[in-house]
Image 1 (cartoon, rainbow, N blue to C red):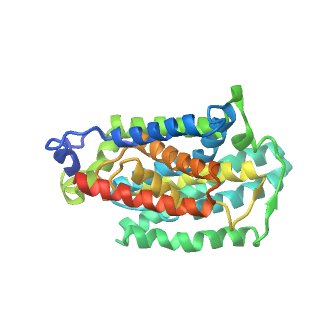
Image 2: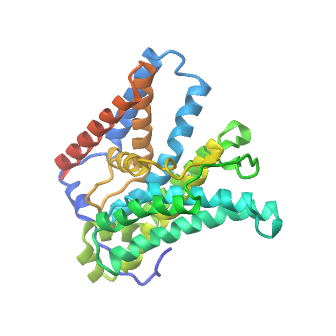
Image 3: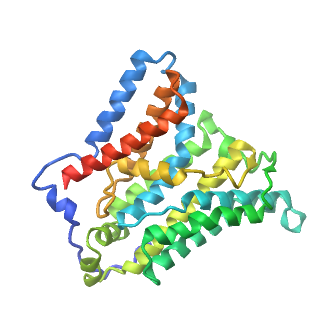
Length: 332
C-alpha cells in the first residue's frame, strides 16, 4: 500500500502542531467515558457482568466498527463516505445469488465466491467514489451521495426487490461461527482494528493519509500521491463495507436490500467523531473509533435496559455527536 521509499519526509499535520501548545492524551476522553459507562452499568444494571451481555454488545457493535475503520481513513483525508450502507446492501445482495445458484454446479465454489466477489464489488464501487472525488473534483459529500441513492437501488435490481432467505452453514460461519466461544465477527473486528491501527501508526501510507487531510496542497508539493491515497481510502472503505454486509446477512439468514446497512453511515460517522478523529481531516485514531462505537453501543444498551424506547436512543446519539464535534472545536 506504500507508494515507495522515495517520498520526502512529511510535515506533521496542523492539529498535531497545536497539541504542543495544549498537551493532551487523544484517547483520554473516550476512555474515561467508556469507563464511566461500564461502572454505571456494573452498579446499576442487573446481570450486566455476564458473558451473554458482553456477547450481545460486541456482536452488535462489530459491523459498526468494521465500517467505521474505513470511514476513519476517509475522514482523515478530509473526506466523507455516505455510501457505506448502500455498499453493504450490494454485497449482501450478491452473496446469496452466488451460493444459491453456484457456478458450475459446485456448492463449495459458490460459497468461496460469495466471500470474495461481493467484497471486491463493494471495493470497486468505493474506488468509483474515489474517482469522482479525484478525477472529476466532486466534493466527497456529493460524490458518495450518488451511491448512497443509487447503491440500494442497484441491490434491489439485483434481487428484483425480493427478500432472499437461506440456510447455509458454510457461508454463515462469518456471522454465526464461534471458534473457542468467540463470535467470528468479533474476531474480524479486532483483526481489522489491529491491522489499520498499525497501518496508521507505522507505515508511510498512514502518514500520507494524515498529510493529505492536514494540508492537501502541502502534501502534494511534498510529493505525496494525493489522488492515489484518496482512491485507496475510498476503495478500502468499500471493501470493509462489503465484509460488514456479509456479516449482517449471515446473522439474519436473509438478505433484504431495503434494510441491510440502513443508517450505517450515520453510525460509522458517529463512532469516528466520538472516538476523537478530527472531522476536518489530518488526525485519526483507529482505536478511538473502536472506543467511540463501544460508547454509543453501551449508551444504547443502558437506555434499553431502563425501558427507554430505541427511538429515543437516536436523539441521544445525535446529542453525543454534537458534543463530540463541540469538544473537537475547543481543541483546535
